Amino acid sequence: MRYVFDLERSARGLRLNRFLHGLTRQDQRRLFLHNPEEAMKALTDEEKQMVRCLDWKAMQDYGASFFCLEKLARTKGVSNPEMVAAFRGETLEEFLRTRRVPGAR
Amino acid sequence: MARIIGGIGTSHVPTIAMAFDRGKHDDPDWKPLFQGYERVARWLDEKRPDVLFFCFNDHATSFFFDHYPTFALGVSEQYAIADEGLGPRRIPPLKGHAALSRHIARSLVDAEFDISIFQDVPLDHGLHSPLTMMWPSQPDWPGRVVPLVVNVIQQPLPKPGRCFALGKALRKAIESYPEDLKVAMVGTGGLSHQMIGERAGFNDERWDREFLELIDRDPERLARMSIGDFMRLGGNEGAEIIMWLIMRGALAPNARKIHQNYYLPMTTAMAVALFE
Image 1 (cartoon, rainbow over the protein chains, first blue to last red):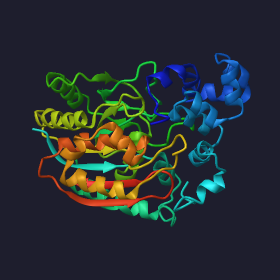
Image 2 (cartoon, chains in turn blue, green):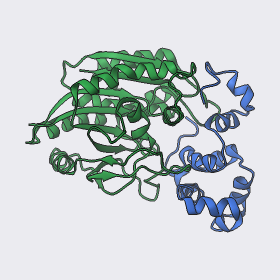
Image 3 (cartoon, each protein chain N blue to C red):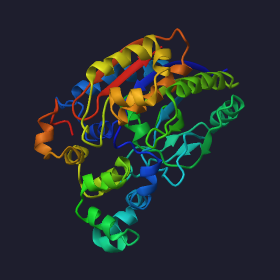
Image 4 (tube, rainbow over the protein chains, first blue to last red):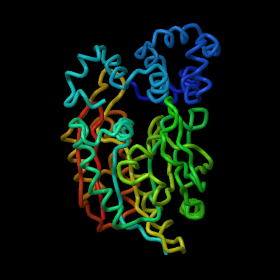
């Protein structure tokens, strides 16, 4: 059973998840959008790079909780189907072709 | 005495709230979802419960992994709407029932369910994405909520059987509250979906329909299954339907499903079911 968010993953991803979770605060979102390096200063270089590139799959593999990634996605105007497509290694269009009602998003 | 008048099982997908807030009621892509909630909204309007007891999960919004509770009961008179990254939804704060909550907390601990307690914590879409489909929020909510937050996002999750037993303990807790109150139970989550990994986008309508049968006719069988079973059959994130078992456990044993709707437009199967 891969990609189970367990205590090992939670410990590994704690710093990154804490940053992502911080985006539930409007002041933190503003800071991130206007001065991302300042907002990310607690992260390691590897973590910063994944966030800068919005590399959803890399963040997931690293230990980000999907529900924390959602906060970053909302801040950057990215939808959940776009994230799911990235996890599957597909474009959004490819992913939507597998759905029953592609407009429902 | 307070009494439980029925129960609702419902998905809590965030896009349900988005569709509602954007007024998609007549959009052909969303109409089958809205229609499925009409019967439930009518039931609530007719039965007028004073309190909706909500079993749901926070999505790392108000609770974080620095301290993530397994079962946490809200005991406030009011709950703000949480900011999940887009600012809070424009709906009124939720009205709580602190006295009932406190009674339930004491009763559960007496029954050896050592739950966490929270107050003055904003609540996220896990509660109010389905709520706005069923209960009018304008000019204000017609009743109060008691929120029970369940950990379904960081393993180990509580066992399905434990959730069902918690529902039974909740029945005793609620029905021993001295004030005459009508309470409806709500269990949220699911149905099948997986948001992460190569199996992201997974659904299984056959399992979903079997679950909707079993939660009505044979919840004990669901309660005997493992979290691993639920993840395999309904996807990693689909295992959150164990929260329906809390709701079901709190209903009278002879309660029956009187309505259901199923809609699978995108990544998560959206269902609602009504029990009386």
